[in-house]
Length: 321
Image (tube, helix red, strand yellow):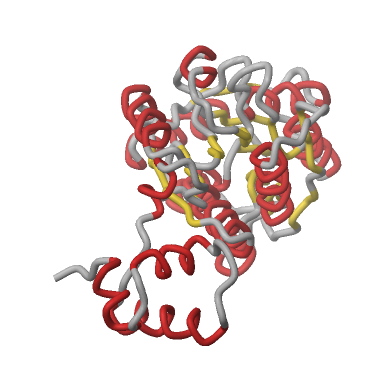
């Protein structure tokens, strides 16, 4: 049976009002009383109902995270950093996996609003501005333009694409290809493509949809390599670069001798388990810290004058160049 507040009061030998005051840190209470209540809550495994407290007008100390694919190694690592940063600031997280589905994203937004979370960090962008403007809670965006009044934190996608192009050019590549994902005009992929094209305007750009299965992506990559025969490839994320490595090996193409390759993200997974891959590294920890910092400012009612923050990227050296 789930313990109730009255059960805690009975075990601690105090009134239910006193238990409530301990939970909400209201009024003066002796250290002895606070300890008795906390010991009783621990013994009964009693958890205060944060959502109910939120409905009573008190802070629920909850933040919603809406991301398009929580199994993606980049998003998984970013979410891990966000959760840790928020926990250290006294907030718990509700993680929502929108899966690029506008209906799921809308339902998650409604759920977070109904539960009166203190704030939201979102990296999904399937809904219109009006959907996000309806939400009362402060919102900070990662890598997406959600609305004119929503601050955006991102890595410097344009210069990331430009750095990839310069690196391939300096490596002596004569025929380059960039493999992009879903790249509407406002997406980070589109900015990486624009940066890449600013250095290598004659490069080939091929879209391989992020919605494709891994098998379908491998088929598309195989066609790109066999038909275009590039000596340099830049992919808009590291997962696609991993598939390029796999397909090139199956085709008997030596990397980097015959084909040079650069990915984008530079997660700790790539650093630790795939050090042969050269990648454009996003400052994931710094991104998470800034997202949380801006959200807490909004929660506390502070004005944010800058609406776009682009954090610097670096080249993660590997053996694929």
